[in-house]
Amino acid sequence: MPSLLERLKTLPNTGQISYAGNTFSVHELITQADEIRQNYAHLAGQPIALGYTNLAEFITAIIAFDAWCSSIYLCPPNVLLPQDDLIEWPLESETSAPVTDLPNSDRQTNKPTAWYLATSGTTGQPKWYAHSFASLTASTKYSEKLQSLNWALLYQPFRYAGLQVVLQALLSGADLVDSADNEPLALMALLKQSETTAISATPSLWRQLLMTGQLSDLKLRYITLGGEIADQSVLDSLKRLFPQAKLRHIYASTEAGVGLVVSDGLAGFPLTWLDDNSQPVGLKISDDQHLMVKPRFTLCQNLRKQTDSQGYLDTQDRVEVKDGRVLFLGRATGTINVGGNKVHPEEIEQVLMQCVDINQAKVYPKKSPLMGELVVADVTIKPDVDPKLIKFELLKIAKNQLQRFEIPTKINIVNEIAHDPSGKINRK
Amino acid sequence: MDLEQQIKQAMQQVAQLSDCTLVEPIEADTLLLECGLDSLGYAMLVAQLEEDLGFDPFTELQIETYPSTFAQFVAIYQLAANNH
Image (cartoon, rainbow over all chains, first blue to last red; front, side, top):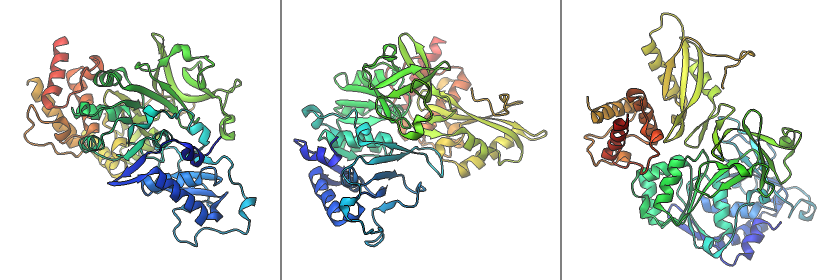
């Protein structure tokens, strides 16, 4: 399997990378990556924690480090590093990297690098999952048509979905403009200015772009939806505006490192894909209606322990079969997906329980046609407490400690909260 | 109270709940994304209106065109109200 650097060097054409008004050719970034390997030869074979500065430096670093360092941890800002022997890049000072006496040839170079991605949502300590360059690029392609695309990057590049866009743009020789973290109207102006022709975004963000009323000003040729469940309304609206565009929605399990690409414009995926050996991943539905996947590549050791006797891994995604389609319903773990942002109900419950006047709290999702899901809380309160005051108090606590998408959009005062026999809150 | 007033009242409620300030005045052609509510605010508004009115046109109607102005938003609710 050729490395990222080798693949880029053999491409007939490479594109351009832009962020905040700066533009670099990928050719320049390849040269800089070569310089990093020469100037910091002692990093060969080492594990790297890659901090995010800007898109050009990020891409230069992954080109330099893939198949050259033992592992790359793509670190979100302010993340706790999973182990302390990682070398943080960019280096704080020229002397901060430990230089060992080993000659370079004795260390692991040119072997597959483990790419570690952190799962989003949890505060403090994220879970890290290893991927190989081969699995990350399983669905990236090169063609003259793809090469002429102009991608907008709307996800953070150190997340799975963002990295997919970065690698697709790089390996197809297309251009890429960092457009993340903008309000919809400002984003729309940037997309128009960059003459964007390819976008990958969450269904919620697509709905916001549709609500600007200006999306049809773009000449989109490549439309991807991912990160949450794509419903038929948003797919139909995009199809109507861009009948010629390639419209795909992606289901990905970051943990398993697998992605399914659906390009028939219909929500969910065809029922015939179950037990179909030509799919990039084996699929079946468990007795409790969870989607089970069996990647064709070797799973990391952690995940191998979690597979069933046939080697299938539980994605914890609930599904139903309807009219020949397998439709996604939500997470079995109770995790709430608010426009692509994951919310863990237990964490919100703990925050609400800080209010001395409540006995119990249960946080769960409510379906939303605009954001996928919203956070709702049921609470039981102590006797003689004014329900109105308590709602106000809970909101105050929540606003002080939670991110906006985590704050319950509705608080119901109830008489009882159901528990299962083990005493845990019933999340079904 | 007519439907438009009800929607404006619900917008006010959601704005208060999410510490947003609505623009004044909101006219028929005011862009939704310039009213003062963000995307999460609109999701909350649709949930609030579902409770107030008993229906959610975005789920029921398979939206043909997503609204971009206040008048278009009201029209979607009017259409759903007529169906009920």
